[in-house]
View (cartoon, rainbow, N blue to C red):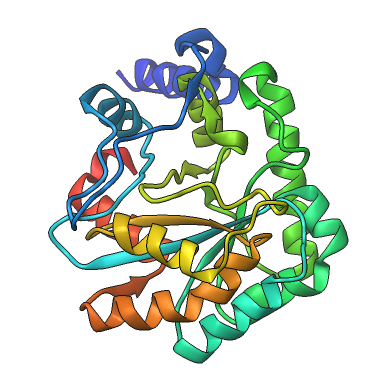
Length: 265
């Protein structure tokens, strides 16, 4: 009996070391999308997408019965506004997650260090910002490992648990590869066109877009390259707090998800 247990253990270990997501999961390409929240009602991605994300421990919103919200930023490159954003977050003691690329790490190392020093999470947005569904498993690993290693070297942040897929493009295969590397996908339930630096419309535009879509459990996606976002952020935070919302970190969110569904974490 002991002999069979040892053989079975060895087989499991071999499978764990040699498992390839490509062999088990579809690489059908998806662009992240959802029906926007309105009047406090939550955004919805649909049952098919909800089930797919659940299989891989991915999230796009939290508990819709609690007025908790999660502030996240994508940092593809620096445009001069991240410092202002960090000042506002520090003033109002709001935690955030910043998803960075290799370019950002190379050109804005001081700001990345500040993010970590001030208690924020630095997440992975890939090194070159590719469509990961066109990359092999090994290429994906190189993209993600490069960001994690450089972030740790720059900031001392140990490990990296969260991935935001570049361009919002993903497949079941890419989610499985990310899981193997220790990542959970963080999508979003509130976003708008804020990344066009040549078409900024003013702080009020950003404010209205956020406030009109906000809902309990929302994961907000904002881009730090937007002057509108930087100028509107303080009003957004102050007024959402007045409405009874609490800003929490992604770590809080994932702990609550693990308690809710421990088999997936």
